[in-house]
Image 1 (cartoon, rainbow, N blue to C red):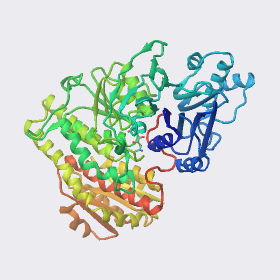
Image 2: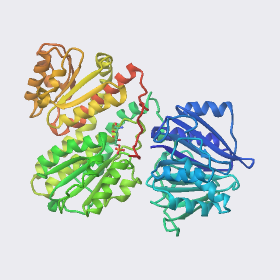
Image 3: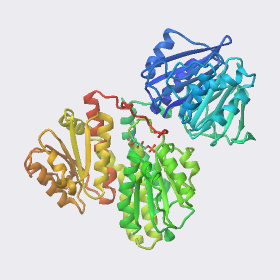
Length: 609
Ligand code: AGP
């Protein structure tokens, strides 16, 4: 996905556009650009690479103007080069875009036949020429935009400025988020609220199909049927310092260390610590009547669902399917009547998860969204919404959002079990008390961060690694492998420890570090047996286990390093054992010199297919 920002102000907008792009860089960072209107012409500055390149260019070659737009790109059509960087422009129009124009090829051919000359390989540029074509026919900017929008297929969020209109920006959204910020004689727009935090906390989220004319005085919003509409203006909690690293070297490290507070805040939303009971906000369905549960997500969010499957089946006796959203939406799934589908998404904008949600709605399924972004598309299109209290997560690798998703799902599993009459009040009390111990336990783990740094030295030069776990440690092994892959670029594979003998054991040799999760739970003994099988074949093992088991494991002999965690109720070990795996990936990435907050090829939320 990409980040877009725009502004009409009483002062020069270029520095503010760059500040806004800095806050959006986590959405995509392979090229960037800004455009302003100055002295009756459109001025652009665009640069390949990280935002720093653009900042240096603007410093070297300043750009003025009180009206402007900006863009930070995650390339879909056309390599990340300067000529493919947004804004795209003709002499009359400049435009930035987040999304994909699916019918761009036919539009491009039509426009070339009309004499338009293209400068880039992007889909976006067709919109510039389409608008220019209508302006050349004498249409007003509003009419030109209306006509163009009706010809486009695909997803977009646009911000557009016009050479002959010094107090007008037109924005439009279909399938990609767009928010309008109301300031004092200053109007801003952005892909999300984070971008606008320094200038306003009064935000209006455009609805699907909306477009708006923005001037210094305010916004005129139209819906997809060209009807003038009012959209509510919210006050956001985000402020300028919400998105700073503070004393931390990276956003990811800050967000790892924020987990005790984030989990505590999330649990306070869903449980009552004084009575050790769950207190879930009212839902549109009754767990008693739910026939089946489908958990749908992508990436790390999918792994929180895979973990929750164990909890819902054990504590609520509910059959659970866990689905990768991009597979689910194209499989024409059978959704049994009376089922509930839960969609898990940090950003709330992941296109595959959003489309899977829309499919479940079409099949009249009850839907519940677990998001970290309350105003997101997935939140707005779900019947029920629970918002994690992780607060904005800027690091591209998801950390605090994941453990907060686990906290929500664990609370829901308890609530479901109680409502279905299969979990006693005493069991509820014990489980909720265990959940409330999580923040303190995580703090103890975080205090051993330097030990994890040492372990990073043992895997930093590996080309491949295996992560093994059983039961609820299996999805956490998958998550640990995903973190290592996406941060350090070392190939890592998570596997059920019991499955390792059915093939992957052939991979074992001294060059393939094996990371094993062995909490003191019902699968402990079996996991130790699997560990001995790999040790016997010369593997070097890093074992994460309880304080109470560490000595026993160290006594097994062979090349083994251990890291001990507080002994805890197996119910919460997925949250605890995630922490050292996050830190291991972080430190290994640092040792390998990769970009921890913005790993190559990734973006924070994948809003294109
Ligand atoms: C997590 O570390 C990854 N960056 C990625 O897998 C992410 O979890 C996935 O893209 C889903 O994003 P979402 O939670 O915003 O839907």
